[in-house]
Image (cartoon, rainbow, N blue to C red):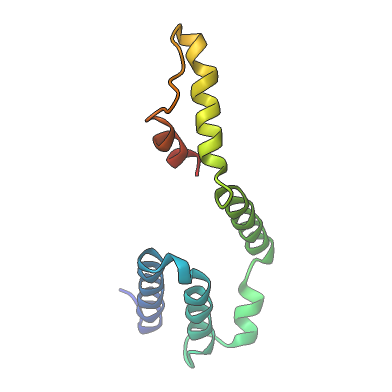
Length: 112
């Protein structure tokens, strides 16, 4: 059975996750607000204990991957890579690459 603190944490996490899905543009503000609520909720955990419980190597790895992903997505790198994959894969199949392929957005979605 979940304790009250675990339920509170789960509700805050679920609410912030759903908020990010609905309002992706505001993800930074949502994450900061959720972390602030979790850290400042009186009975969940002391701030000092929370800071010691964080594995900062994982946080920095996640942050680095987030920056790398944003760097590729913003200028449209997935679409460029998808077009390149389609054009280079066509001769191997014995077909010509279409000028404007309808497959590129699908491939770009998997690359993003």
